[in-house]
Amino acid sequence: MASKHGIHAAAEIAEFELANVEAVKNYVLENNVDCDFVLTQAVDVQLSEEHNTAIKAGYDKLINAGVGATKRAFYIDGKYAETISGIKGAKGAYKYTTGHLWPYKLIHHLFAEATKHDNLNLQTNTRATRISDFPDANGNWTITTSRGLLKARKVIMATNAYTAALLPEYREKIIPYRAICSRIVAPNPPMLADSYAIRFGPSDFDYLIPRPDGSIIVGGARRDYFRHTEDWYGSVDDTKVIERAKDYFEGYMQRHFRGWENSGARTDQVWTGIMGYSSDQLPRIGRVPDRENVFIMSGFTGHGMPQIFLAAKGLSRMVLEDLPYSKTGIPRLFEETQARLQSKENFLKDMIDRQASLAKM
Image 1 (tube, rainbow, N blue to C red):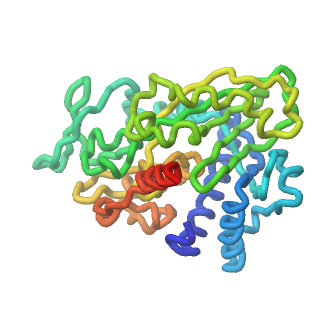
Image 2 (image 1 turned 60 degrees about the vertical axis):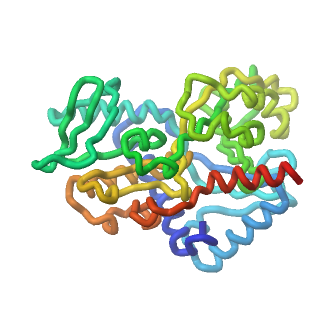
Image 3 (image 1 turned 180 degrees about the vertical axis):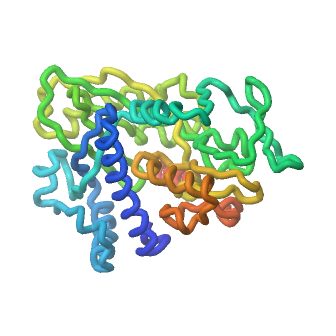
């Protein structure tokens, strides 16, 4: 991030994500939300020496620039990386404060509170199929739904991977990405308190979240399916598991974690879900260009949990208070602009091309 957009912009995003953790924690505690929230440590592990060296160089630049977020993280070098992280073959690792929760339970609570007011009509199974190309003479946009027409002066597109179905200008700007996830269980699991990112290279990583019931959520498996673009690129079909990757999680804990060799850990469930990948890797938040009073908060590129809570708060102020984006507290790089929409950049296709080139070597 810093190498492309500069240290100050990268620092702004890092601070925003740290603030997001605090904001979610405070909301959960103050409102006694039953959503399995845990404040814990994240362990970001590098298994490639080359990637570890590159990441460490970037981290050192942030430290030297005085970026505050670096004071809430620390680096574990190769000598101790494996023993402290518990990951076999670790070349380096970072630890920092994070949190995890059950998103559905949090969202259910938020909507339950919102519906106590008489100015909200919540519909969970009404499909929106079209938005008019222009507002009418009264400034209202017409939304076609499975239950009829709806008119609204202001529209918020919190549609992530499905945005292009309603706003065609987002085709190849927010790309549906079908991914795979699993639940691993063990009869008597060893202690596992931290969440993990296990990085095999610059664009190949898995993530792991321990649950309070002793089960473990593991997602990733990109190594097994990424070069087969028909499995994931542009797919919105979440009824099918990625077949070539479904066995990836078998023996996962035994392969990667010290002390889990005889744990009996096994894959209990495997499922799929659709993410919305932004073509330039950055969320798209703010006013939609050339569509007056249409707003967007989408394209989180699989990284929405550390950003969405405060992003939604900031966007809400834009909509309700007519606040300029610069006053929302959302990182400047996330703002949607005409230049971003017109850009030909597509980092996913660049990754696909690099993988194809490596496969030929």
